[in-house]
Amino acid sequence: MTAPTVPLVDLAAVHAELRDELLEAMARVLDSGRFVLGDEVEAFEREVARTLQVPHAVGLSNGTDALVCALSAAGVRAGDVVLTTAFSFIATVTAILRVGAVPRFCDIDPHSFNLEPRCLSDERLDGVKAVVVVHLFGRAADVAAIAERVGDIPIVQDAAQAFGARTDAGPVGALGQAAAFSFFPGKPLGALGDGGLLTTSDPQFAEAARRLRVHGRGPEGTTELVGGNYRLDALQAACLRVKLPHEAQRRALRGANARAYDAAFADLPGVTTPNATQAPDGSHVWSVYALRVNGKRDALRAHLASCGVESAIYYPRPLPRETMLGSSAAAEGQFPEAERACREVLALPVCAELGASRVAAVIAAVRGFFGR
Image 1 (cartoon, one colour):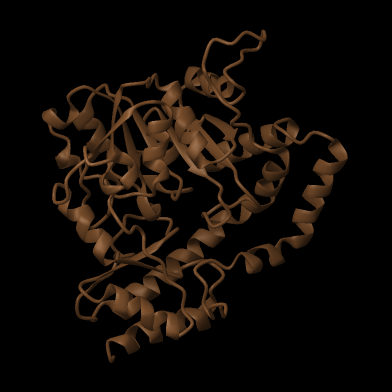
Image 2 (tube, rainbow, N blue to C red):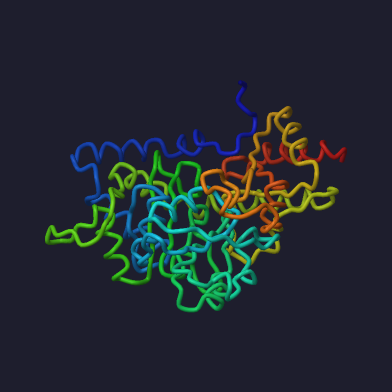
């Protein structure tokens, strides 16, 4: 298969610019002989905490494990009910299942794609032990409005796509009980493999997470919690330290690409843009540019492929309809906005490395499909 002219993510371009620094960081780890946790991880935790403006950051093995760790530290146990959005990547719900909890779902706001606070009725919240709020596609969810609805129920944030996003109440990593971030290579801040992070404002929560990542063992060698092997590799931490200072600039470039798309697609029939110009300043980090196409999404995707433009469907079905959950999760039709999003959303290339010529190529391909 021929490689697309315009890829969704251009990791080769990202790493070419930083190649010498990355190789130096790798050599430093090799020479140290310390490959799991250690000084590199501790230094990264300090640096990323300053960047995200959070008191505590705990380096972990990946974003899914970070969610599992956060739910465990929040006291979620087998049989507990955890409420989350019906529209997200499968890892959101598998993390809930991995702690033995039972997922319950809510529909989404059609504009932000995030959990709709108005769906959080007393009936829906009955018996819920935690709420997982997803900042989907890099757009900060309204955690303050959700907190008003859920009261004392712990809020855990799935911020896998939202590194650097902010709300009026503060950075996403400092809201709720904890936030889980992913450093999968294609994320806003990507490692050279897997990596994750848990952030919190609560020192006791952070200490619990540090124990959970090493099988629940405490400083005296005792095991009081059932944890796992959730440790961050020193090699990934060292590479993330190289990339971290460049993250804000890359975020700004993604925002510029998103605004260019919004302006170019505003007049297309049946197309809804995510309105980069209307998103509150800093609230969207554009890890995904999610265009809505009414009725012609799949045809547009095929056209883009013929033009050498890569695209992706985020996501093919709502979480309650995943086969692994069985028929008891929910019947089709209970989550109309999530169902509609699955039919209409198409992700376009928005990465910082696109450059003006490739942005123009995407615009020309999309507009050409509509004869504009």
